Figure 1 (cartoon, rainbow, N blue to C red):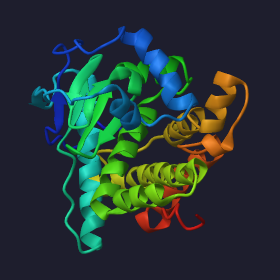
Figure 2: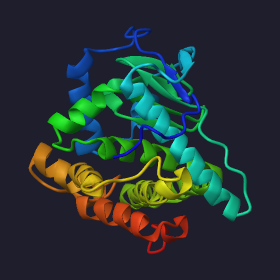
Figure 3: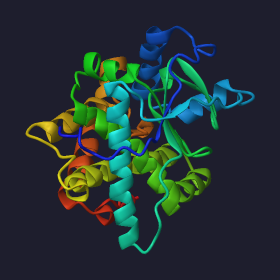
Figure 4: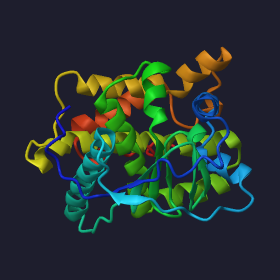
Length: 283
C-alpha cells in the first residue's frame, strides 16, 4: 500500500508508556479479551459498561504525529479518511467533523466510555468521539488471525472511522433506539450486525476514494484489497465461533459472518459511494 506521501493532520494522541494501571496482563489479557470480543461477539463498549462502575479520569497524551513509523502510518490513514469523508459530506450538503483523535495506548487507558483495555480490541467511543487502539492488536491480527499487511491495518482504522460517520449521520442513535425496542436479543443483534457491516462498507468506500482525493499519494497496490478481505473473513462471527467453541450460533452474531463482512467491504470498494452501504434495507 502506498501511503508515505499522504497528508498528516496530527490526529494521533500517543499515550504509550503512560498507563497499564488498569491492565490485567498485557498481551495475555489481549489474547483472552479478543476471544470474548470476536468469538462471542461481545461489543467492547458493553464490556466496559460491565467492568466500570465509575469512568476514570480521561488521560491526555501527546497529540500530533508520532515519530515512529507505526504512528506516522496511523496518522496518514486517519487523515486520509478525513479527506475522503469531508468530500463525501460536502456532496451531501453537510460538514464533516473528524474524530477528536486516534488514541494509541498500551494495556489500558481512561476514555469517555470508561476504562479502555487492550483486551477489547480497537473501538470507537461515541461519548468522546475518539478511536482507541493498542498496537498489540495488529500483532494479534497477523499471528493469531493470519491477516497481515498494511491495508488490513488500514481497514481496521477505516472501519472504526465508519462508526464515527454513523454517529454524525444519526444512524448509530437510530440503531440504539431500535435495539431498545427489539422484542428479543436475536433481533437486537441483527441491528448490531447491520451497523458493523455498514462500517465495513464505509471502509471500502474510503479505500476506493483515497487515491483520487489524495492525488495518488495514498493508493492500494496489487494484493492490498485481498489483504483487507482476508482480515474481514478472519474476524467473521461464524469463523471465530467455529474456531473458539466448535459450533456456530447465528442468532448470537453481532458483527456478521465472514461472507457478509467480505461482501460489504468489497461492495463499498466497488461502489465507492456511501449510498451503496444500506445494510439495514432487509431488516
